[in-house]
Length: 88
Image 1 (cartoon, rainbow, N blue to C red):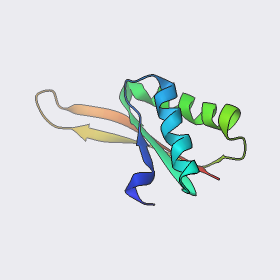
Image 2 (image 1 turned 90 degrees about the vertical axis):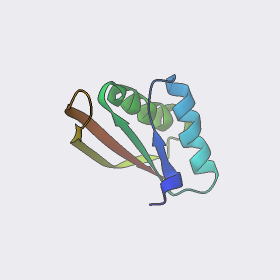
Image 3 (image 1 turned 180 degrees about the vertical axis):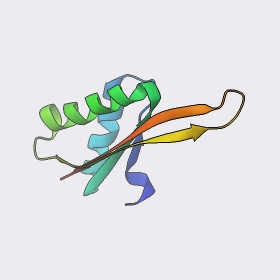
């Protein structure tokens, strides 16, 4: 999958990310990956569900990957990650 077909979810309102996903599909992308870490995971799930239920009922969840990343720096630790792949 090309890097431009990835939407990274952060602290902005969910609808900003929904618009980004729908725009990717309208620009011809066959699959779009929604990625998030930590507290943004619940927002990423919301984005995927809003896209599927309200804007693009033909979109299907084809893959969900969960994992853990190790954070290095001042305060080392682990953070959870999720990758939700939607396909038309």
